[in-house]
Picture 1 (cartoon, chains in turn yellow, red):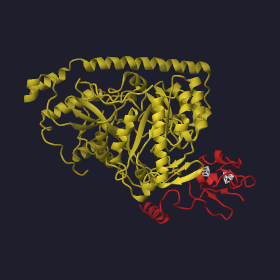
Picture 2 (cartoon, each protein chain N blue to C red; picture 1 turned 120 degrees about the vertical axis):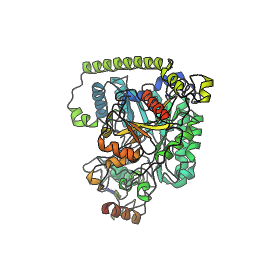
Picture 3 (cartoon, chains in turn orange, cyan; picture 1 turned 60 degrees about the vertical axis):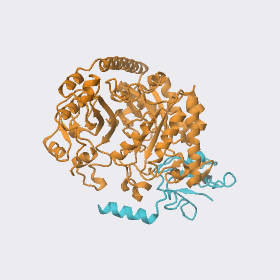
Picture 4 (cartoon, rainbow over the protein chains, first blue to last red; picture 1 turned 90 degrees about the vertical axis):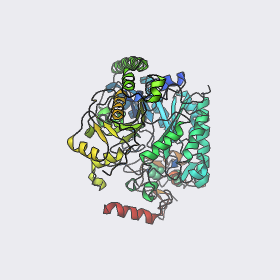
Length: 507
Length: 92
Ligand code: SF4
Ligand code: SF4
């Protein structure tokens, strides 16, 4: 089956009053397939859980943003894990997690090396799990070097989500990202290595698409190395049928011991990242909510429940067939409930929106008065950060480990990214860094004008205001998008949206 | 004629399945090479396979204790730059 070329379309511009879910532009059959996948669907990540099992230790390439030696308890970069599992252990752990957390719907193999450089371990895990929990979806993330030779095998296991990390399609760019690859019993270096890797990635992408397997492309944005080039990458992978492109920021600190970290390569700012994502979005669906989760994270996206499921705790559990069947039934029931809630929400979103009608009566701009009540009131878009939990504004400011960032206009709120508050080793003495956590959080919120949370303390309130960010605790436990739009309308009425966004003061 | 795995090995498994002589085995605290079995891949491959895929500088040495992948050869980080970065980090 050939996948059609995908464009954003439908009501993604917010014209129908609902927020632009990123799956809106996808063909129906693909949308159905990604609906329950927390890594792919902007909607699903509020309701479904995923986990990664660290069964694949070996790697066949070196990337300048990776250090294979790194194993820090506070590590939060992807691809770094502390507990290597055998396929048997990984399956048992997955079953235990899926029994305790009925939202669990995806098992991914993403490391700590490359899953396809460890094909026996990876495929043994998938085979065993498919037998015991056929409802759990399987996915694989790969650098692509060994992909073409694995496509047949992948298709056999009925694995329909594959993520390829593609940072370049030009070997001269690649030579600045990949120092070497292991290829046909040789260590190949430089431009030649990059050329082989790129060829394999593109071939693998084409073969998967031809087989009807969903392919997502991840790219790491490295300022001055591939930032401009990624626009071209986005165009090419879209044309070949990848259904999502996820641009992630480089994370580089000298402490990580990576080439980029030690050599002083800088990370992109949140604004630079957003500008690139915006530039790529014209071409295809972009994924904005990727958390760069730890490869062994367990739980709903954004929360890490890994400590509840360490291998010794899991080994001690007894998982009878009866117990597993019950767990399967609970998951099925939950999925049905979520599907029904989503339908209801969709129906509400498409109903006439009284709020907009009221506002246009208050301040009818010339254009909207002429064109009728469905035209959004004038005012610039505002970035708002939200301390979210389960799709609601339900997190205390001080407890939020990350903020979802929405671009809000009168017509709707669109998720455009997320900011972590504990990107590196924040708060850990062993890293030798005294960190002002609040200061870092405020820094991480650069560009946002409002923070919505369920509650906020006195000190952070003052510091946020001083930094030019308005704290807002007036919408606890409300749905994110309507609350953001309401706040936007308050700003509009207060006359704050006539001028451009204020320059950030130093925190 | 045999290579040896030393303590900087991170137990990544990459080398083990490549060895044509089944000389590599899992051990604690790190993987080891059975010196009686290792042929340095002579007759099988032009390059010793374990040292060709190993991602860790210094983890595999020859009989003279020389690393097959010396500092800087895999990461591309010049050793002087690495030392300087370490000094800067510990001075913080
Ligand atoms: S040099 Fe060759 S034979 Fe010796 S341990 Fe390494 S892979 Fe095996
Ligand atoms: S490839 Fe190197 S680091 Fe990995 S297990 Fe072998 S010797 Fe150890």
